[in-house]
View 1: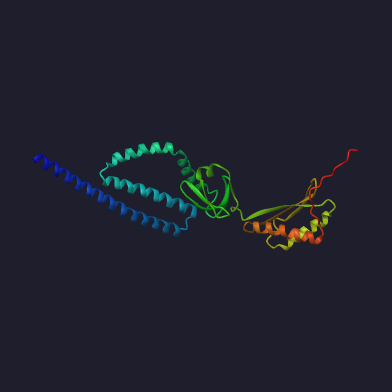
View 2: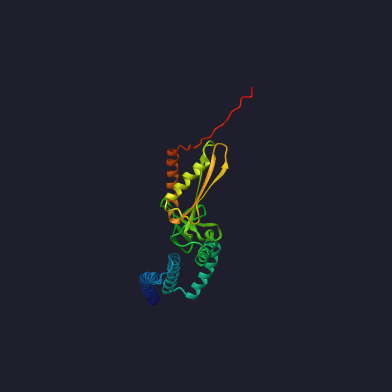
Length: 270
C-alpha cells in the first residue's frame, strides 16, 4: 500500500507540475502574442514618424516579427521544462540542416538585404524583372511583391532580383517615346514631316528639351518608314504614346497621306 500511495502521490505531483507548466506556457504564449502585436505597432509608428522608406519599413517589420516569434517559442519551450541550452543546441543543429535545405531562402534573404542597401528600386516603382512587370508593393525578407497592370500580385524571390537584370521605369523623371510610321512610296516626305512636327507642337506634354526628332528611317519593302522620337514626363508616357497614334492616323487621313499595305510584284517569265 505504501508503494502504491507513493507512486500515486508522484503521479499526482507530476500531473500538477505538468499542468502548471502547460498553463504557464499557454499564458506566456498569449501574453507574448499581445506583446509582439504591441511591439510591431510601435515599430511601425516609429518608422512612419521617421519617414523611413516603405521598402525598408516592410523589410524591418517582417524581420522583427520573425525574431520576436522565435524568442516567444523559446520562452514557451523553457516554461514546458525544455532545457534552453539543449534547446539552443537542438536549434543550432536544426538550423544547419534547415539552412542546407533552405539555401535558396537564405539566398533570398541576402538578396533582400542587397536590395535595401543598393536600392535598385523602391516601393511604388514600376519595374520589369524575372519575366514580370508591375508596381512594387512591398519588399519582404524573402520576396518582393509587385502588382501587375491587370491587378495581379506576383511574389518574386529576392535572390533573383538582386543578381538578375531589373528594368526600373520610374527612376528617371522623363522617358523617350518612339514611333515608326510607314507611308507609301509616292508620298512627299517634306509634307509628312511638316504634319508630324505640327502634331508634336500641338501636344503640350511633349518636351522641347531634349528636342523632338523626326527622320526617314528606312526604305522598306512596301513602305517608307518615318521614325519619331520625343521626350515626355514618365507619368505621361503611355497617354502620349496612345494619343499620338490616334492623332497621326486621323490627321494623315485628313491630309490625304496614305498608309501602305504589303505588296508583291509577280513577273511572268513567258
